[in-house]
Amino acid sequence: MRVLVAPDKFKGSLTALEVAEAIGRGLAAAGVAVRLFPLADGGDGSVDAAVCAGSTAHPVRVHGADGELRDAAFAFDGTTAVVEVATTCGLATLPAGELVPMSASSHGFGEAVAAAVTAGARRIVLCLGGSASTDGGAGMLTALGVRFRDAHGGEVDPAGETLIKIADLDVSGLLPLGGVELVVATDVSNPLVGPDGAAAVFGPQKGATPAQVDLLEVGLSHLAQLLGNNPQPGASPADTPGVEEPGVGAAGGLGFACRWLGAQRVPGADFFLDLLDFDGAVVDCTAVVTGEGRIDGQTLAGKLPAVVASRAIPRPVYAVVGQSLLADDECQRLGLRQVVALADLDAADSSRDPELSRRLTEQAGTLIGQRLRARE
Image (cartoon, rainbow, N blue to C red):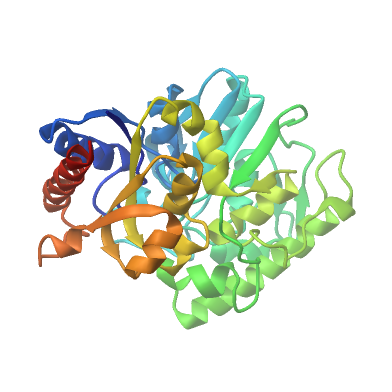
């Protein structure tokens, strides 16, 4: 018996690799052979997942969400690069407990994209989870060579609070992207503006007050109009995405700027399973253990564990999760043979306690391993 351990991260406590390692130790303690295969769906952790699957980590120096220089990396296999917001300019780049919703910028993400182009990437996967900014991707565009100016001709350093000051932009210095395929792998379907848009839905999560959300909304609308009137070289205004297009509100509107650059949006979970060659990894395994921090109604709609279960057929699939909000029949509909929730193993909250999460996850792996051995 050989089991593929293919979980997502437990957000706030363990990375996908740490989850996989803990489950693997538990399974091994029960006498089960394992292959570790940490996963991602286009959110934070995507670079690590790509590296675990065989890509090389390329270091890059970028500006974090607060403008401070920091070390980051993108994954590259010689053709495809994976670049993520989370570790370049996301919430994780801010000091603990600090939120800067109006001044945060996506500039560092653009610096990493530019580095991937320079490295020779022919396809770049843009992973938008974990963002700290609501600048519509203007910071990223600045790093790629777009220049924003105010009414007096002075340069504007774009952030959520300064978008409304932009009167004009110059795209003549945009880094040439011809021949580079840009892919946004995300299951986020929010539009740019409106009650379900980037500012209204995600702004408060980044620390924005109701008054600031209103300012961010106005700024995003203004930026969208400017980009629509100034297509990138070789494009036309008709190529500019609409503000209501699904997914353009991802990562504080970064999805809109990525689409303006010509990026195509694809379902995150399925795309990453293809990118990491899940089908090749599972072929010689007799069972799969997946997982994530919480399974709920969104999981039923196609989040990573659901996709893993579907693609692992006819192998039995088990899940280790921090918390399960699904009934037993719903778990069975997902194709999960058994779900072990950390919340059921200990009354203490493990969601912000990495050591407790690690210990309970290993315990869950042992429980699943014992069940697998009993079925032999």
